Amino acid sequence: MSSLRIVLNFQAGLGVLANMFLLVFYTFIILCHRPKPMDMISSQLTFIHIVLLLTGADIWLWDISESLNIENDFKCKTNFYISRVMRGLSICVTCLLSVFQAVTISPSSPLLAKFKYKLQNHMIYAFLFIWSFNLLLSSIQIFYAGAFTNVSETKQMKVTKFCSLFSMNYIIRALILTVVTSRDVFLVGLMLASSAYMVIILLRHQRQHRHLHSLSHLRASPEKRATQTILLLVVSFVVMYWINFIISSISVLLWMYNPVILSVQKIVMNVYPTITPLVQIISDNRIINMVKHMQFVCHQIFKKR
Image 1 (cartoon, rainbow, N blue to C red):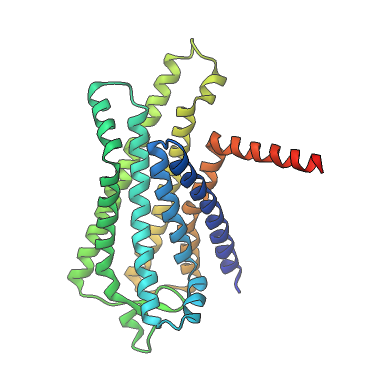
Image 2: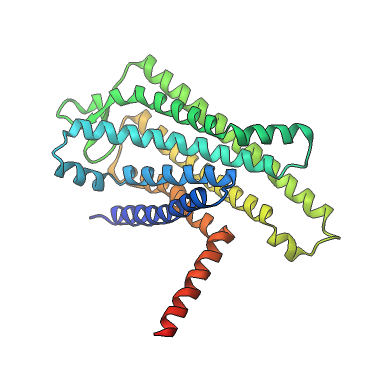
């Protein structure tokens, strides 16, 4: 096994474990407590990242599918479709997270208060639209994915060890590329705009309240901490997205995927879903307090023994 494959599997394993821990935490909060709207969005993002990391580690799924005697073509189409859907959902939900936090920390006004109220009460419809749109968009591409065959390599582009993309009509390719690129550019632009707005709000808040609050109090503000966390996630997503976009564009234009380039691209793609739960775990006081409580309980148990 190559060193890049070892790095990829370690990265995927770490990301899946961290996301599963976070998903269990959010499930407990949603079922047993009064969840915040941000918890609902974050739980969606966590589930998406678990599936994204599992489909990215194609060796694991291939071994499982092999034991179930599933046809190679079906395995490739399923893996490709789920991966595409999850990538689209990841950018959509991250954008929703950024926009909602920007609205949350905005100065109070009747218009924003009304918008925030509608956003909170129509969250389920936003999720349904996001899922439906990405499921439909990715369904078009599934017809051009399948198991690697012995036909001329100019008619197919290998995208994993076992699967490939087959050449498609120029108009269809241009249409898919236009829709996907338009979606991504719009959402990335919206994320950057909301992030810039949040930075402006934080700087203004800090200047206005410097004479009333100490810097330590400002650092401890839950809203400020949550905003800084989301800003970090947005920046990491945008950077990794554009690196992945450049690699993908070059590969598609040359109609060639080198195994090393493919492994590097997968590592880049997995950076965001891997670091997101780690950043959220470290920055969420509820999780930190829960871990401290568990440590205290364990210490008391072992002390009695």
